[in-house]
Image (tube, rainbow, N blue to C red; front, side, top):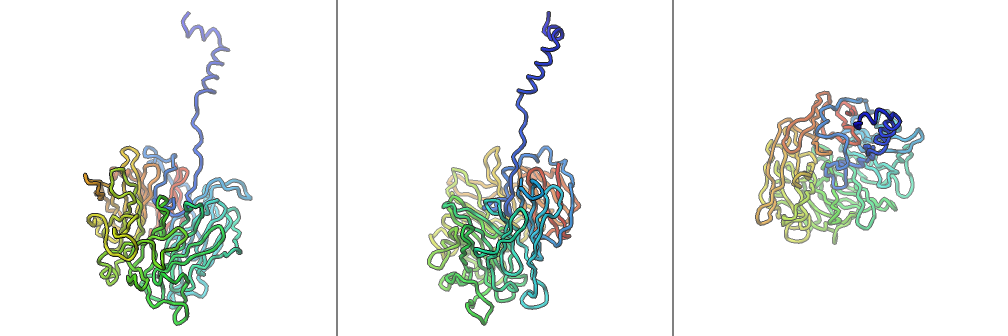
Length: 505
């Protein structure tokens, strides 16, 4: 009797055999949910979502709109996302956005329904004490213990809210002062959170000025210890002061103005060096007088420098031209690049700017001369942006899992460019342009090997190696600083029409 006939003659055995196979064959497990706690995913603001598994290059073409909801106001930044939150209404995934009018809004990530919201609006403040109301382009950040979310208010403070019900913390230093001149000093950058090597966690709040560079403002960073609420202020003008300046002729104030810290990413944290990095806009560069215009500088994780100055700094040799022509070096923040073993520089970053070029810099010795206050020191030649445009976005950085090559994606209003890190025989790094598009892009991100970017009216998914468009949707509103996030199989983005749109498989 053959094997088929033997099975047919024993139906019970057939049933048990099938049951055995069903029970013991390994089944795919549900992917563990993960969070997108701050702008561009991580403390480095790499824009590289390494945890996404549901959307792939193979299925991204089937994305479709899940919902589009109207927010109380335009959110001109990126959302934050927290999964598996135990709320009074049950376990939910939640989205958080900071709106231009000072709202913080918590929403159900599956439906877009508002769970709670608060607003610290402009009140009687007007930009430069004139007629236009103040606003913010900041993005929220989530506490490392997943209990609180932080958001910038138009009252000059950053506020701390309980995730589950929105109750605000009003003790232990909270809300925390960020500026005494909210009419002159703007919260442009996203809030950032990092946990240092000593396990201390900090919130970083950067301030700059409003469009036009008017008013009595000094760019500065407020660093808040999330354990005890203490803070340190590093003033990009008057760096030896550690105070919040007031409007002149009051005291304390500083004679130099501008030098905004206003890049989308604000502050980036390098875990290997245990330092934070940021860049400033046009303003005076005079280390003897503690002024740091058009400079990339590093600080300790608690926001302190060294002897009233940054720990280290990089300033282009043409800093006077940049200042005079309003070509802010700090229109974007340093993007940290993973470096291969054969690279002579182990801690590398790319720095863009309004002067339409990219620079490679050494994060462990920014000027190549040791310490703050020197000029020059970038690595190799300057690289022109192919679209000939200023860089106002945060680059995304990605390592191709196939060949371990590092890639950098840079967006402008009129283009998106993909660069691959090249290392020559002497170990000197450089950037090679691999492909470019003319569609334009706000700050791009990459998730599970798929590159995403948005421009007014459109959002698209791209193969990062070839530049091939894998998916596109043409139903967005206007895009300014808004940029997408991807979390647990859903793509989210806000727009200038005051919408939050979600796409899923």
